[in-house]
Image (tube, rainbow, N blue to C red):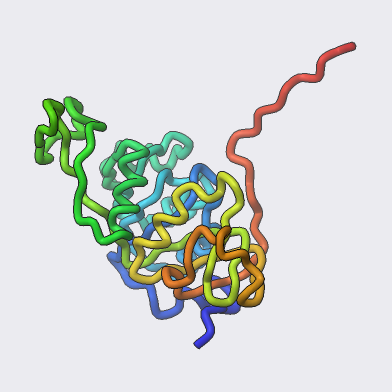
Length: 234
């Protein structure tokens, strides 16, 4: 049975339902599954819980789903680039569960590895630790964090073979590999699909066993923050 689908809408067909939990790879706008996000907007699924490092920007990435009020809750690390996110959160329209960035990454990795929880020092003595189990190891206090899983993971890679083995492009790898592992179903959008055997097995970042559906598309790759250096006069 082929894993390759014609487009994002076709790949998401039969997978979405109101109230579902979705993991979305990416860091800022780098390595985000922008085609799958747009397809979620189009299908109108609502009351979503999104697990993502951030919420995109106004009008792009996950910011599109915020504008259409399809997101009920965000489990995130950084949300500072999105005014609509700020407005919804401060007005009580949007639930937010903040995580230290490394903790969020490890929660996703743990969920994908079948680990229900782990202890970390990060957040001890802060509001992050409120209501969480504390335990001492070798004289140091740690808090218990739980692994995360999702009904659906949407990720972005540079290249896939037809069995869903994925290779990411440099920093666009970010949260994508651990989220690909932690979804009950994972949809990967890529820039190139190659035949089985074309990828060096030692270079594969996500094995195809974690990927159920693949789409190839054209990506905008918008730049979130453009910083340039002024030209020096000779």
